[in-house]
Length: 226
Image 1 (cartoon, helix red, strand yellow):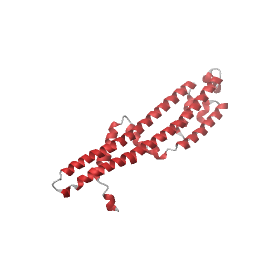
Image 2 (cartoon, one colour):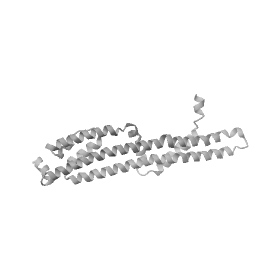
Image 3 (cartoon, one colour):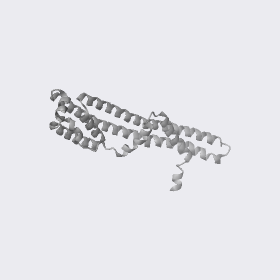
Image 4 (cartoon, one colour):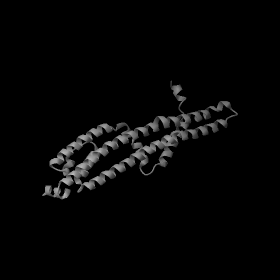
């Protein structure tokens, strides 16, 4: 069994494909996207968007209930383990106008989508580069093999590199990087969907309170602190 596995592993071929793909992908990244790309493997395994959506739903209902008699200024009193909902509640409590909170929510969602798109694009780029690196390794292996045409017994290593780099490139693209990018895309879509619903409800709550109180939020806040 060990001998069979050894036939499919060559350190040089592995380094050419994996190292080359990692280098090309890292060079193509901008700013902190490279670090975020590898850090995305944590939510890749740990993210539970459906669970977070349920927690967010319960938190928003508590905020709505609390705001009925104390106002949205007390939204930050609602505790939740989901960081996004906690930050949104704190922003809602600190905002002096509904529109200020709406602007924050819009910018936050746009920034989040941009970060997600950059990370997903990084993994998709790696999936595209992998087969190309495999082809480069194949060409190198063929050159090494043809250089030994006078000695057929010495052609084996070159042929092994040529075949294995192609295999590694295909595995990297279609069994690793491609599926990672696809799952991250689904997680991003699900996460952004429930976060969008959350901020829409909080913005609506803030605007309803502002319209309901003569003088807007500022008057209500002054009355509460008086």
